[in-house]
Length: 421
Image (tube, rainbow, N blue to C red; front, side, top):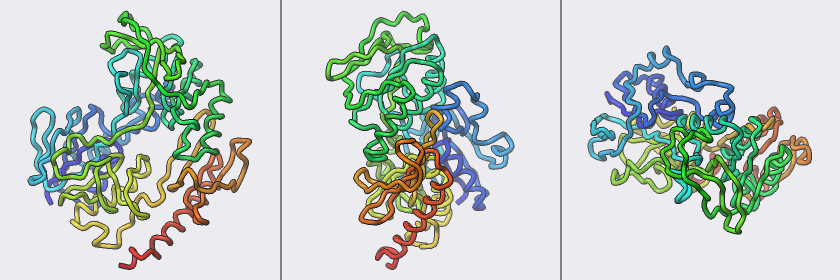
């Protein structure tokens, strides 16, 4: 293998590039990135960057020396539009064709939006640095009334940031309990109360019917001098008739994998790029990792892991699969990522941490602290088996239980019938 194309210049793509060199690949590496920036860190976009505490340079994942060391060819500001399954040639949006012996798919995910809510001044998503720039400008122009649609982790972090900036903010959530699908109803309700305790208005069970708009004056109100929409938002409308005044609306309803460019390539793109536990796709010489990848789950089925740590853990295994031509199922020796995914979220002065694959109806028990104080560590169990750990601010105990969870999962996998075949 003499040439590898990495499609995606974010966290996953950058770690794939580093792993290629660390694992001895001395051929040509070409990196394609839809955004004009070199690799940068996304988690601060909804927190410290949005609050104006750090600048763009501090988001960089690598300095000039590190970029020079990997000796890659960067094609940023260009989107991949097609993958030829026979030649592993990637076509870019300017017509350029890049042929290689191996391809790493690390195109990440795109922010979901709501039908009919695009191209309206004052309406934002938050996924990219450009999104964060525009939203920061909107939030620092006067004192805009802000409505966040979606009480997931990104929406919750944006709401906490608005509060820190002294802005009036309202959160609307379609579920009756925020984050119930991820954390279960008990911890989800505690997260909701965390916002209410800080004076943030939260409406759960709120279905969004649309927006009220008015002609855009084009005077930059709300920081939208760069928006070309002919109308701007004035309110969010609920299906039950409620109307919430808004100068800025942030849509935080999750993401979808960036796989449109792979249509017709032979890669399984149902809810992400399907791959085995080693990152191998259906095409020889093509692997996937990061938010776009749907990995085989040790417990059965498959799932995407949209977490910072998942991308980092996946990179060594996916690159080894690419360079050796063997998936983990064939070698049986490589470590398997994703068995115990880990995620954290900073909101107000609280750090929420989650590890594992808990279900909303798993049994929940406090190990340390208390729910009432919003300072605790709890474990999830299913039929007596540990499935997850969640904490608010209790990092030391959480770390210990996270290790125990990983050990228990490893023992379960090693003793399973699939491990002995």
